[in-house]
Picture 1: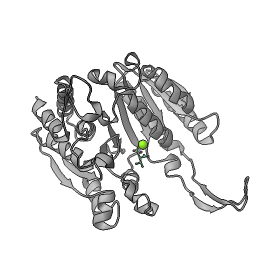
Picture 2 (picture 1 turned 120 degrees about the horizontal axis):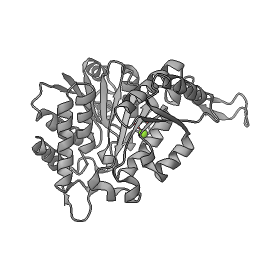
Picture 3 (picture 1 turned 90 degrees about the vertical axis):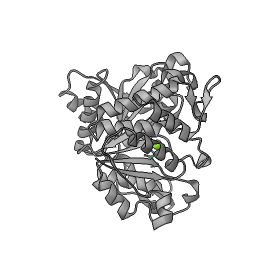
Picture 4 (picture 1 turned 180 degrees about the vertical axis):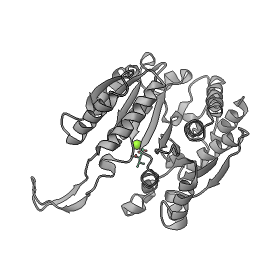
Length: 356
Ligand code: IPM
Ligand code: MG
């Protein structure tokens, strides 16, 4: 089992190092190899996703990804910015299915900005389409406006588009995932305004015929954003497009108290996957040893379950994370009165010790 480790920027190296130690403590035959990505790769090789890093990722069964980005790169040409590394990996590896669970751990209920009774026991799964939509649609660019309110003015444009097969395959992923859970899917769209999302809604409805045991509902994205903070536990699986999924998954992360707890998986049709925390590179706390490594450690668990066929090892990691939370260990982002404040490395080591 080959794992490409791409630590990236900011807190990326600290959190991936903690997760690697957990992986190595499992007693499995894992081949781990690291490569630079994002700003770190730009510094080392002049490109955020060098050919050698992409090849390592291609050859691996799974990729453990830290985080990329730092405001000091915001003035670079777009193709050289760190974010292009993650977008490039998604595109080149065809990682179209993004799983973003939002689970509120019992001990962290009070850390949420919502009332405890709204989030206690929350366990929802956002499935975000990851290789289409306005993120990748062509044409895009800047030009002189050929028409519109201000003809001749400087204008920028992107293209929102989905093909039927792209919607079909992500809908199947969502219905299959729902079968492992409470069998309810909410498809989030903007069919009242956008052609793209009328097609989305039509196709999801058609695919649903193959899954009569799963309950399907449709919701407009603006209403979904509202329902997520009004009654989040009413959801089970949410399936949506790339951009709406980007926004809603950040919103959902806050229901759980800390984005520092949330893993994610991005899979292609061969179950090859990229696993990364849902949070970013947090340059403000980089190198201080205070970042929460649990999202990355939980991402490693998802990797074992989805790409490496090791569900027992995944269970062991998840149980160990619950155990360290029960022991009262907390990084600063989830710390509260009466708990023990620990750093990144201590938290990682505690998880290793808690492995059965
Ligand atoms: C995410 C991030 C990325 C995205 C950025 C870094 C390109 O926000 O994974 O949610 O927009 O998809
Ligand atoms: Mg995002």
